Length: 258
Image 1: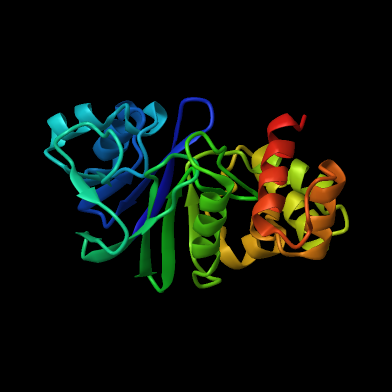
Image 2: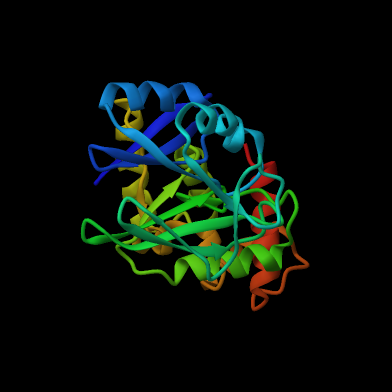
């Protein structure tokens, strides 16, 4: 299997998984990069996986479906261009000989889902849309802090070698914020240096790994004393033992962070 992040817009990635003959794409906000990749690789698009309804994730769906006949899969409770196979927690998608498990991860949007395959060439693979980013998480446009915490807890519980395929190249800005939260986190400092080097060469920082995210991502570390204390410094009303309040404060802090 070949896993490719196709750049789109200013900082999106459309993930493509292909076996040299057939392909799956995830969150194609723009059809053009996908069409170009299909032609260059000589592969046929069989399935389109959609995590949520935002335009930069679904804008290319109609054109790709019409051009290729690919089956579109998407969240049960969001407006996705029809026809679409509607999915929720516990459902599965079979594509390229792989089985993807659907996980409900509301927070960024009300009906956001993620796709998880336990074994792709020997390691798990997660397509998490805008719920989890490397070093960060999505803004709470429709969901609540409690929903986002529950969603992130579900994802953080996946195996440590899970490849985390987010859909935006936000890593450097996320890590800048993460260092403000945990300036003494040595794993975070080391990872920041690695990512800065990658971006200097115009290479993607993704996919990340879940074990790494558990070490460096403040939104997965809301129960760590240093993270909870930093949230309380930002918002004195936060009780450090209240993980939902800590996450809410971190998200608000990140929204304002420059």
